[in-house]
Amino acid sequence: MTSRKRTALAAASLVLGGGVALLPVAAASAAPASATAYSCHYSKGSDGNEYAGHYSGKSVVPSSSTVTSAGIEAQCLLKRMHNVLPDVVSSPGTVDGVFGTTSKASMRSFQRLANRDWGAGLGVDGLPGPQSWPWLRGLTV
Image 1 (cartoon, rainbow, N blue to C red):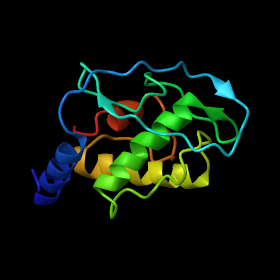
Image 2: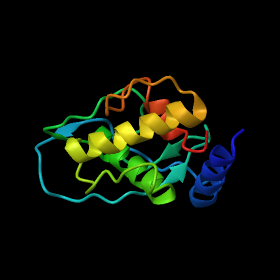
Image 3: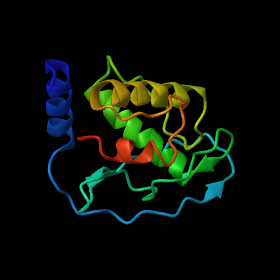
């Protein structure tokens, strides 16, 4: 394991902390776009994955034009990873549920990190989909 990988894992583990009860999460429903900034309520589920209280799945691709719970969730998880590794994962911007240009750039930086440090083999497309969600949820992987 490289020194950089150990440092990243140690930093993520410190920030993400221990097991907290899983908060109830909403379904991946869509709502009209708005300028609302959503809050993130982080917890670690009994499955060891990270949750932010908005969407519990691992397959919905957030919309770039409509507010979705999957978009809010992905932005929250990217925000948390950015706070842990600001020089590696760019900020997703405002957590507004619309997965636009800034969120996609953040996701691309996360996908590159996952590929480089953990050999994830993800396509670097800037979208959390069925291949990327498990890596985004398993931030301490």
